[in-house]
View 1 (tube, rainbow, N blue to C red):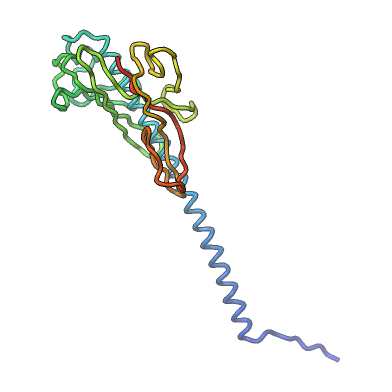
View 2: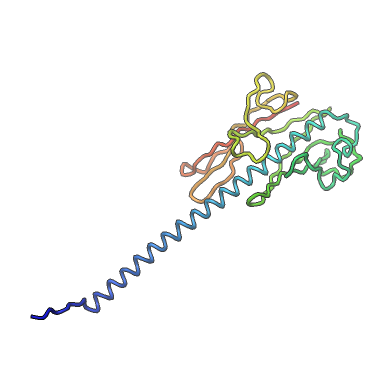
Length: 229
């Protein structure tokens, strides 16, 4: 007796095809969403790393400038003290990714290199990081009368995150504390600095700052201290 071949009704075949299409669409949407999240996380991670790099360039520039001011005679010209005749465009630091600007008692940028060192009331350091996403970060430090200075010193808990010479948090003991040079005294602990992350967002967290709520992860990357001469 010959066998008969059974086939699904057209309605059931159409339903199966529709269900398969829906499942493929759902899977494809999940793959696209996961890929987007991964790409965004990589981009935010790159931005944060670049931001930290430019921040430490600026911090190193402030430290170098304050040391030069402290060791220079007050009546010497700024251009001579820093070896740059055109200070209006910023004094280049002795390492890449850093420019310095000097402010007078009115908070204005000093553009005349013949002005003396004792006319500098504050130092503005602009750090730049060109690797990855280009970023800039600026730090200002006040210069006290008589050449003394106070500034905020940022140090890092891990050497792996530093694109510049290591600013590792180190307690030197005594009055110097965590300050980078024995000329300075640690007068205040500002607390930790770092970042806050949530899903695809990664935001810088200033010293002593917190994150929005418990859904955000807190990342402690370093400490901040006020150092005074």
